[in-house]
Amino acid sequence: MTEQTKQAYIVDVSAENLAELIEFSHKIPLWLQFWQPQNEPSIAAVHHLIGLAQQRAGDFILAKVHIGQQSEIAQRLGVTQAPTSKLIVKGEIVAQSDELLTEQQYRELLAPHVPAEASDVLRQQAQIAFAEGDPEQALQLLAQATAVNPNNFLVHLDLVQMYLLQGHLDKAQTLFDKLPDEAKQSADGKRTLGLLFFSGIVAEADDLPSIQQALGENPQNPAALYALAGYLVLHNQPEQAMEALFTLFKTDRGYNEGAAQKALIQLFAMLAPTHPQWVAQARRTLQGLLY
Image (cartoon, rainbow, N blue to C red):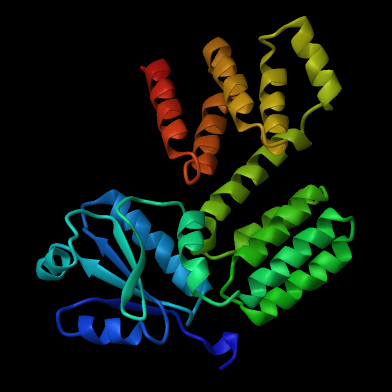
């Protein structure tokens, strides 16, 4: 079976199929994900895992357990809250978590129990080629990765980021706009959207030395603070970027039709999947300044 023809295995667990699913875990891993409709973290966990199941189609079974409807199953497996994850291999629990994880953490939890995914291997080779100054080879490797597994939207997000690093903002935006919602709403998708947003700021700004000079003359220069935030994000300094945007918001919240607040919200969305506590505190700070 080629990877192009594989289907994602996503099922709902019931008393009738649980034993069969556990038996099937002797062939491929079984991921039991416990959730509840009114529990936002558990809904987010299911969303992350559906995306992972689609990317790794055929490599594991995602089995969703509605705690309210399947309380006996939850009780039997010692589950009292959502989101709880249990990864079962050959009938045995090999990994588990009782909290919401990031997409990357779910991937890492699964990785030791599934084969190396061919398109991810090609992605890594493409990233190395790009870093070594061979973008043409990188693009060829990404094209191969897409052919191997069209479901792996991370390949397309890699291409968007490569376009950005080459200064092709229009190409990057056009490709991103064509991606499915599941790609855009993934942790990598939100990060890429943030990079597009802040790349747009930098594209319209002066060069960095001019911005630093302007801030040396006036530390509250709104245009310079806004542009500096863009540069800081693109140089992987989000905390300093947030400080610059908060300074701008405090001194001139109306600048460019509320640009500071819009940029902060974009930065929150970009960082929330990987830095949830930090972003939660920053959101509270913004709310305090607003009201």
